[in-house]
Image (tube, rainbow, N blue to C red):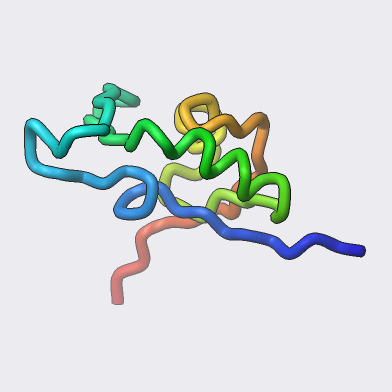
Amino acid sequence: MTRPTLYLDIDGVLNAIPDPPGPPGYAVYEMDGFTIHLHDELKGMVATLGQHFDIVWFTLWNERASLLMGPQVGLDATPHLFTSWHIG
């Protein structure tokens, strides 16, 4: 049986983007020049999702999602869909 695919974004989904200092339970990371706020429970939650779904990054982070965010949420070498800004 084929597992469903879960397309996972970062900004506004995993990265809560709160105003400093951020609510309790969030760890702050500096990644690629950006400040990232991740809730402490996300690693376990995303790992659980990975047991039921094939996860694909769908984010403007592109290949950097797997390199920078993957280790923070317990995902190894997860594929991504290439995305870019489109204006017009």
